Image (cartoon, rainbow, N blue to C red; front, top):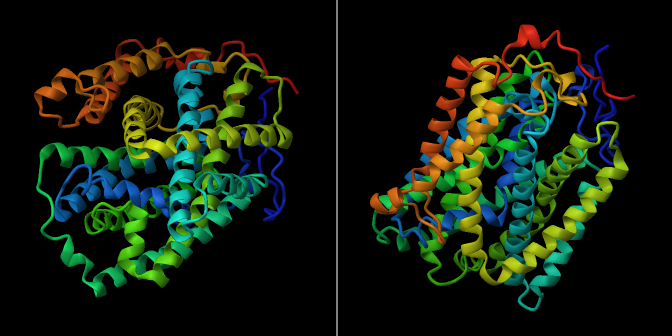
Length: 482
C-alpha cells in the first residue's frame, strides 16, 4: 500500500480561508497555478527596499562605474536565474515543497542540514526586509522610531502569513503592481531632474568589484531556489513545467535587475545619504513620499513569503523525526509566531551595522547553497530525469531514498570545502582569492566541483548514491502511519 501525503489546498482557494495543511503533495485535481501568476509572485518578491539597497552596493561599496555596474547586475542575475528557474520547473511534476524534495537527493536525515540552512536563510531575509522597511519609514516620518517600525512590520506580516498560501500569493502579486508603477515613475523623475548626469563619470572598473557584483546577482537568484517549488507545485503536472520555468525566471530576474539598476543609480547620486533617503531626495518630495511609503508597505506584506516558507522548513524538520505527526494549521500557527519573534529580534540587532552584516550574510549563503543546488539539478535533470517516487518521501525509513544518501552528503561537504581557498568575505579571504586579488569565483568552483563529483558517484558508486533503483524498489518499506 502506497502512503498518500496530505493535501495542502482546498478546491475553493478562498482568499480568507485559513490553510489547514502544510507540507503534503498537491493532488493533480487541485492544481490551479498559471505562469502569469508566477510572474507576479516573483516580481513582487523583489519589489522591496532590500533589492534597491543591494543594487547600490555596485556603485558604493564596490565603486563600479554605472555601465559596468549594470553589466555585472545583468550577468549575475541572468546566470543565477537559470539555476533558480530549473528548481522551479521541478514543482509541477513533483507537487511538493522544494526542501521536502531534498529527501530524494540527500535522504530523509541527510536533508536536515539543507532544510536548516534554508530556514535560517528565510529568517535572515525576513529580518533584513524589516530593517530596510524601517529605514524607509523613518525617511518618510523622521519621528517614527525604527524599532517601532520593525514591530509594525512583524504584525503586518503575521496577519498575512496567518491565512497561508493564498493570502501570501495575492498580497505579493498586488505589491508587484504597486511598486512596479512607482519604480517606473522614479526612473522618469530621475531622468527629468538630470539625476542620470550625476552618475556617468563616477567610479572605475575593477575585476574584484565586477566579480563581486556578479556573485551577488547569482546568490540573489539562488537564494530563491530553496522555495521556488513551494509555489510552482500548484501548476498542472503535465503542462506546467515550461510555464513554471519561464514564469519564475521572467518575474524574478526582470524585477531584481530593474530595482538593482535603480539602486546603482541612487547609490552614486545620493552621495553619503543612505540609499532609501537618497532615492527620496532624487525623485522629489511628493513622489519620494509615495515611493518610500509604498516600498515599506510592500516589504512588510511581501515579507510574509519568507515567514511562510521558513515555517514549511521548520515543520519539515520536525516531521522528519516525528513521522506519525500530521501537521496542520495549529503547527503552522505556532511556528509562524516563533519565527516572527526570532526574525524581529535579529532585525533589531542588525540596525546598528546592517550593510556589513547583510553582505556577509549573502556571501555565506552562496557558499552553502551552491553544492546543494548542483546536487539537486544533476540528480533531477541528468540522473533521474525527474523520476521520483514522491509518496516515499514521507515514509518513516526514507523509503528507497533512505535516511542518508552517502554520496550526496559527501559531495555537499566537498563542495563547501572546495570553495574555502576562494572565499571572499569581510572576516576571511582564502589564499587563492588573495592571489587573484580578491576576485570572487568561489561560487563557480563550488558548483563545478559538486556537479562533477556527484556525476562520478552516480557512474562509479551508484549504490552510495542510492541509484540502484530496480533493487531498491523491491526492498521492504515502512509505511506512513495513518
